[in-house]
Every structure is written in C-alpha cells, then in structure tokens.
Amino acid sequence: MAPQLGIVLVFFFWPALQAIEQAFYVEDAFGLSREFAGLANFEAVLSDATYYQALGTTLVFSLAVALGAMSIALLLAVMADRVIRGARVYRTLLVWPYAVAPAVAGVLWLFLFDPTLGLISSLLGNVGIDWDHKLNGAQALALVIMASVWKQMSYNFVFFLAALQALPKSLLEAAAIDRAGPWRRFWTIIFPLLSPTSFFLLVMNSVYAFFETFGTIDTVTSGGPGGATTTLVYKVYQDGFVGQDMGSSAAQSVLLMALVGGLTWFQFRYVERKVQY
Amino acid sequence: MQYRRPGLDRLSHALLALCCLLFLLPVWLAFTASTHTLGALYSQTASLWFGEAGWDNYRHLLSGSFGGLGTDVLTLLINSTIMALGIAIGKIAISVLAAYAIVFFRFPFRRLCFWLIFITLMLPVEVRILPTFEVVADLGLLDSYAGLILPLIASATATFLMRQFFLTVPPELVEAARIDGAGPWRFLRDILLPLSKTNLAALFVIMFLYGWNQYLWPLLITNDADYLTIVVSLKRLLTSTDGLVPWQNVTTTAVLAMLPPVAVILLMQRYFVKGLVDSEK
Image (tube, rainbow over all chains, first blue to last red; front, side, top):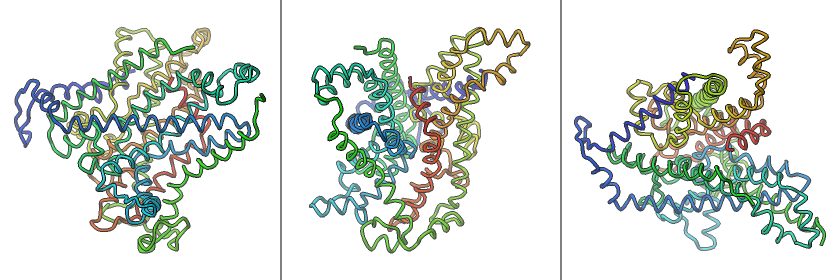
C-alpha cells in the first residue's frame, strides 16, 4: 500500500496542486519572480483565439478518429464473427497495430504520404490532387486522423469481436426463422445489443484521441501548418515547453483536468446504470 | 430464409483479407524502404519490393552513432526495454501490494486511500506534464531511468483489476491458510500470486506495451542521448538534417521500434485480449 500511495502523492497530487497554484500566478521571462494574478491566466487563455482553434481541432479530430476507427472495426468484427473458420486468424492479422507506438504509426503514414517519394501521395498526384501536408492544413489534419484510426482500429476490433461472440445465438436464430435477413438482423438486434460496448468504446476512443495521439501529431506535423493540427494537449506542451509561458500552460492544464474529470464522471455515471435492452 | 449464406461468407472473407492487406501496407512499405539506399529511395516513388542495401542499414544503425543522434540504435533499444520492463514490473508490483492491502486488511483511512488512487484515473500524464516535470526536476531525476519509470508507475487500472480478482478469492481459503499458520506474506506469495498467474500475465502484456510506446514523457525528461528511447528518437531523426529526410534510417529505426511490442502482442495474444477486455470493465 505504502509505495502506491507514495507514488500517487508525489507524482499525481503534488503536480496537480502545483498546476492549480501556478495557474493563478504570472511569472517573468526568467522565472525569477512571480506575482499573484488571480484569474488573469484563465482570462487570457479563454480570450485567446488560438485556444478556441485548438478546441475546435480537438473536437473535429476526436470525432473523426472515434467514428472512423469504430465503424471500420465494427464492420470488420461483424464479418469476422460471420465466418466460422478463420476468425482467430483474422484477429491475429488485425490486432497487431495496437502494439505500434502512436509516434511510429505517425512515421509510417508520413512515409506513405511524403510529398516527394510517398506511394499514396504520388498516386493522388496521378489523379490530380497535390498532396503537401506541410502547407495544407486540412491535408495535415487528415493525415494525422488516418494514422490514428489505423492504430486505434485494432483496439475497437478486439472489443467488438468479443462482444459479438458473447451475443445469445438463440436470439439471432429466432430472428432468422422469423425471416429477418442479415441486414435487418444487424440493425434491429445486433446493433442495439452492442450499444453498451459502443458507448464504452466511444469514451475510450475520445480519451485516446485527446491524449495518446500526442506522439502521432508531434512526429507528423508538430502541430502545424499554422496550428491546423494543434490539439488542446499539444498546446499545453507547446506553450509550456516551447513558449515557456508557464502560467498559461498551467491554466490550460487545469482546464483540461476539469474537462477529463467531467468525462470520467460522465463515464462512471453511465457505468452505474448500463444501457440495457 | 436460410441462416447461413455462402455468398455473404465469401464476400466477408474477401473484404477481411483485403483489409488485412491494407493494414499491413504501411508497415510493408517501411520494411522494404529500410532495405534501400538513400539514393535509390529518392530516385523513384516508394518501391514495393526490397532494395539492394539489404541488411546494411540495420548493421550500420545498430553498430555506430549516426545522424546527429549521438548514440546507436542498440542503446536506444536497451533503454526502451529497461523502461518498458521497469514500468510493467513496477506497476504490477505496487498494484498487487495496494490491492492486497485494500482487500484483505482493515486499517484507518482505507476508503480515503482507495479514493486517492481512484482519482488518478482522471489525471493522465499528458494533462499534468508541466508540473510533473518540475517535481521530477526538483527531485534530480532528469536523465535517469528512475525519472523515466517512476512517474508512470502508479496505475489505478491495474490496482482495480487486481482488486476485482482478489475479491473473488473465497474467504474459506484465507481462513484455511491462517489455520495452517501462514502469515500475510506467505499467503500472498504461496497462495494469492500463483492463483492470479493469468491475470498477472495479461497485465504484463498491456503494461509492457504502454511502457514501450510512451512518447511525451521520455521526450521531456531526456536530453542526454544515453537515456533516449527508440520511439522518441524517430522525431529527432526526421528533423536531424536540413535537407532530405534520411528515410532509409527512419524506416529502419521504425521497424526496429515496432518489432519487440508486435512480437509480444502476437506471442501472448491470448493474455493480451484477456487483459484488454478485463482491465477496461
């Protein structure tokens, strides 16, 4: 017990309290003196247009990653569940991207889309699309989203397949006897029964898109061009470590903690009374 | 209407196979690119087949320092291994102890301790980077293995998983052990740990991957190339030269960075799936 508590106190609560304290102070450029600033840091952050840009990017990014990774995973899991022979083989073939680090995934996709020698960028060039994610913000965001979806899909796939295989077969057979086709069986029986898994995955995917994609963003675009791929977490890093604006970064940290706290609270409220049909 | 439809099954197989190939494509390209020379890479768009450099890129990177990195890839691999193993083993050790204390012992502030651990679920490293960095700097742990490992070692998820498992241990077993004269340590070592072997293996896989794939934290606290991990080194490689990106080095390093975690996940797939599904419940 003691070691766990020690680590928790030193590396979680001490920093968290420091962040909250620092959020209320303004430091000079050399970090020599600081004065109490009340809510000035929060006001500065909340009236900063780039903060809202980052918020918007985060929302678009999270939504795209969650929906993309979940719909592909669901489609593949339903098909892998259908085929009796080979479901395990397909699982093996689809599960490994989970082991690839987000930063490595970013590098792999960066290579595919490299403007001079990438395979896909040259294919796109043949159909008349100029690919340069270093200049085009929308393309940069799309590239980061693709790399993140690629990595996250396998996680969703494992959960969807496990949930599908746990569904009561008698229900589906009864529906088949009642002349419900595969399409109808999916939408009226399987999909509603999967809703707890889907909801859980939605939360997990959002958390992933929020935090773990830092490595992908840093290797692929470094938040650019023009802040087009700067998410909230990336901004905390950029303002704090690159820009050395500790007060602003700390205020952003506190806002993020509140946001994640809210998300977690929401998730646990949901867990209390699961969606059941 | 029949329940099984062979046509649909064939379609499923075809689509699944296609998707497996598509998912493999980025890795395959990186792998083939890692066997080309820089000149060959830039003379054409990425080729789908191996180049003439063969294993030379690997031999070159593993043996000597290169490209402004100040160290060789072998050192990076060793650092990553130390960090991943340290995090996995450390997390499991303190989680088992904490769960053991919470489940089997009555002590004051038990609920408070439980909640203190519980709240950390809401504070991933990425949220508290800056203040944690300062704490670690104050403790003088920058550029050290302890600094890499310790801040990431507390794990609410692992503690909960172990707690859930310990709660299923029947009280009769605890009583029987006590009657036979086993003390708390003996009970933990000889009865509880052997019982939780599969859970421990599952946790180990998840935590090893977590440790190996860390990016932000090692990026922040290591300036010294001797403590750099392989995942973090990729970014430095990408930006190390002003001109052309040395893609043959980058892809080689990326392949080497992927190999250990992918091997772990494929070899221990059963435990991995169990650990993943259990730990998120």
